[in-house]
Length: 484
Length: 95
Image 1 (tube, rainbow over the protein chains, first blue to last red):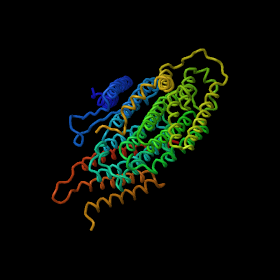
Image 2 (cartoon, rainbow over the protein chains, first blue to last red):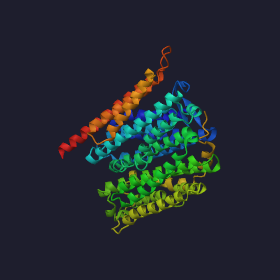
Image 3 (tube, each protein chain N blue to C red):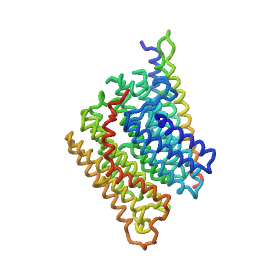
């Protein structure tokens, strides 16, 4: 049954190749790949829930010789999120690219991106992580430049250069760790690593590289142009999945590898940068003139929350409180993934329909596109972190953790970030509900609007009301108590 | 006394930092892409230098395999960068 891990990586890769060979059926292969990923991640999730973390040795070669895959609560939940978003985005993309020839370039790259994401989430070996990081970066850059227009290509080039620098820094860290400890397997490395110059330098290089990739303030400047100029299905995937994958690696490195031996002032620095990102991102989102730029800055802010979580977790002693905070972090990451993809997909519907996404001229969207406006509102609830949404539970944990460690200022930052978020969300909704004649149709483009709404509903209702199974699930599979 | 692998390792680190400085400065795009490649070569040099296990023993094969993969990755990233730059140039000509 652990074969599911291999399928989640191989099927999208195969689908990507098929999409190059048979462009006519590329939409269908996309849907099939995404569906396979959903099924595979569900199988994996049930396995992890019943038997704990799963290891799969490719070709039966043991770790050190061959490549092994590993899934625990965190990675299997993120894989499920990736698969669900991938499915909704794929359905949306079929309709989105129906009347343009960009589709034949979109599908192969999209499936390569999915394959790289799955491989990264399941990788256990630092060098494989580097390779998936590069694969993900190359696919993401090519997707950003998809429409070939000047702003998109410029944003893609900037994204590529920074991404390459980030992964080179990561690779330099990998080389240092290999020279110091003679292994690249995360589990083995975790047992051998000692505090010292080598591990410090490696931690600094790898973290710096990943911070660029996860767009933590002040390294966020490449993100808004790249995410705002890409086609809607691409922006949704970039904001919801690609940035979060880099964050996942930071989490993995610090909790599994460097955490116990090295934290200290690093946690304060990460917390400070996270707090700055929350305030700066939300403030810039408030100033944005276009809906997609707003969504991109909102991602900068949301990534900030995740890093504040990380800083708190690094400072907490092992125990109940730490476990709850990790669960809160996961809820927050999941809620943001679903909500932000729903938001970008809806922005795409509006852009298609009105020919622009300027916030000041949104008047009448509520009447013209009631479902899409409803989706924006639902996603907005999750971005603000209002009650019943999954993000509310996550933010609650965040504030509780900050108060537990007596970081009053951090708690204040989280609260003001939410206030700013509600300001930018209600600014959009206020415009959208402006007066305009009612066209008499609730659903104008079901194939685009329904997947977006499904994602927003998962973010608010499912994660909010039905998140109780997630809690014990994550408690049983502690990341730091990693099985060897 | 500096050992040979140490000299290679230090040279790699030096190459990496020099190239990183160019890659971060405001120079023509192509030069920055080249600088990123040189920085990559520096890291590969560090990696390879760790393979040396002494004159009597065989070198560790793992770094070589990794560097080969790394070269392939760097090559494809460079190709993508140049393709994007060409697209940008063409759109500048049309404007």
